[in-house]
Image 1 (cartoon, each protein chain N blue to C red):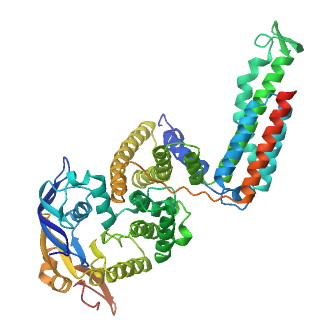
Image 2 (image 1 turned 45 degrees about the horizontal axis):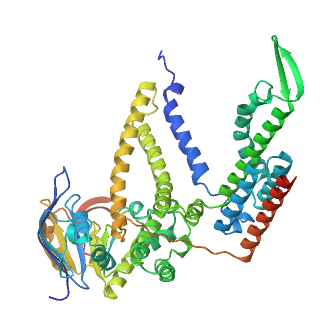
Image 3 (image 1 turned 120 degrees about the vertical axis):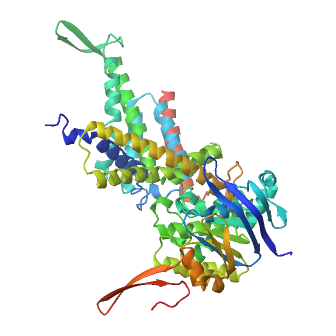
Length: 283
Length: 269
């Protein structure tokens, strides 16, 4: 009997294919951006500026009670943008705030954050004291992260990625950087599909890979083959760019079509931010 | 002559570390001509198109374009390079190479923008060429979401937006469904009627009668073994057989199977 079961043998292949599937789903799927909803109807440039203002306000506020309205606004906007709230909460609250909670855990105790004791316990001869200052600081940290992540996820879900890349240009990011990122995005799908096809082709010839050593060899071929093809393709793409007049200084099509509604939304979000900041720093 | 666009004399080219790709090519292209370049795989057709597009330069021999010597040195002058790019456009065989922008609209706009066309004019051209190639509904799509036929039409649109005098097509109909092939042939014929010069490298011998008046045949020795009118070249059965350019058909008639050669210009029996 083989020491390695088939399940273990194709572990690398399954991991790579799952990673590619996640990549396609998370990065390249624009299902929600193509839906008809409130945020989808806004101009990406002004929408990004509005979200940026809300994000800066979120990290500037020092009270969870003041960050709460921004999180509430985020959920309301998600609802009116045809994004299922269950899906949105799962995507924003499950991992990142959970890990931030783990990071901030030691901060609760008096040994890290001295202060007014709220609750104490005695386990295995060790006295643990949770302080009010530690508790408040930890809650603020987690609420800030949850709200910031929600804002960023909401923006990326409701905006087509190509539009988001163009917004970078408006924010002063150099053209060459925007173009390089755009091209990476463009070819990500192509190479992901190429790797999938290579695995399918290998499977069609040798069947299921049953030993991890063979699996490692297949992955090594795949890496080498993908590397060769990307190198070759990069030369050809450069030629295609030269053929259409590229001389090293890219000029891109940046469209900016804003309506009264876009400006009104930007104005409203700035009013919300200013009010919260005023309330936070005038108290 | 004043209407001479390209003149190649004894042009040689070798890819670094590889076998020679062209071994002494002589060719003259006049304005308004409709030319097909045919030959087996690896005979140098794509290399020739890249040389004609000023992407690579002959290692030996002489080449002129629009009456001026074309070399790596002349292309280092940005103004000269832009002048050339405005006049010559290449549609690559692999549309995935040509469509490197994140959306169809940006791909069509890329060429004119690099060549200094104003944004208003670029917008006008996008609408115009997308209408001509029936891709207006694809403008905001991402290239990787398109079918092969759609990608090919977008690739042609990206060159059409530059409005060059000379169109170079590398296998424009390879792997496409019949209706897309028809659309592309109609586009090529139409462009030629509007005075554009067309040079097409292809394996699809059945379309040559429509897309070319002159045919150049590349041989295994990577040079042009014959050039002439479409009728004279494609009508020479023994020449086509000698250069593996004859289709072989297998038929069933009344329950019997037979195999016969089929010449590109012959009616199909």
